Length: 364
Image 1 (tube, rainbow, N blue to C red):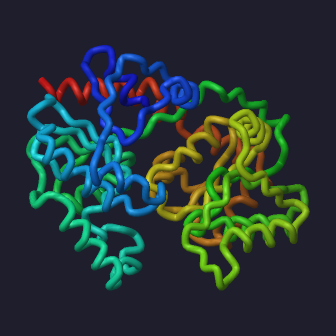
Image 2 (image 1 turned 30 degrees about the vertical axis):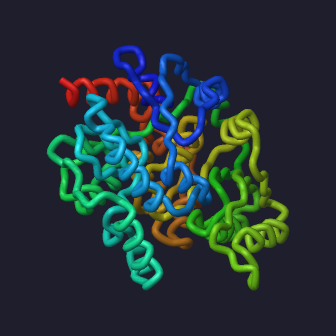
């Protein structure tokens, strides 16, 4: 939506999509004002493929989309194709915003997980479905959502990508003074294995043994994509852990107002995903006035300005660093001063300005 808003005034924009969007609701959700956009609905196998589960089969869906673009000769009908979801093999001039490259699994932090016959068969199917071309790299501007992701993009595609951090909306945050906040922690994100919520709980429980004045709020929906019907799911394990400790509160999926309230009234944030591509939740924690603690690795390192005092590499390291800051008002102030200004570095106006500038460069 922010890309559409950035481009709609100066350019004639067609949105290629599988369903007719409700711009009233989307504008309300993203705080945008998208109005002057033409809709082109995708049909055929590409549209059918998007009936697959939302967070699965992304590579297959993109392969069908690539074939749709080529079979309908869209490259000759537009001056520019702008992909807001990862790389596309297309023969035309394009800008491609990559959240994480799917072309080469070897650059994935957990590459060994994909070295199975099932993934080999899946990749073969995607290659058969997609077009038999490498894409027009010379006429493509590759954008990545962080320097960390950009390094993966460059290795996977053999290109030099440009980092454009995603837009973080900070307009509804009005943080309380530090002294007025609760001495607690907030996590924002879905409850699924890659978010390491159980490890977060372990960190907080160890902290509570040393300082019983801390508590923990977990905000986010349950999303256990890889659970087996024959064993306890990850979400069930998290719920069981939450019930064990009275100082840990599972808030579930909450309204935006409740999310803002919890962030703005607590001193600390805790992020668990090891290789976050960017980390909008971390940026929101800072915008809301918290000191967030994040794993070393991934794009979240850039969000916290590479501040070593808030980056951990193990449970014990997290406990040690957090306790050090909990005990020292001087350290709390020092860390707050070193954390980046979210609106200046990651805000919406900054994002739209960069998108306009890059688009003008490419189409000129």
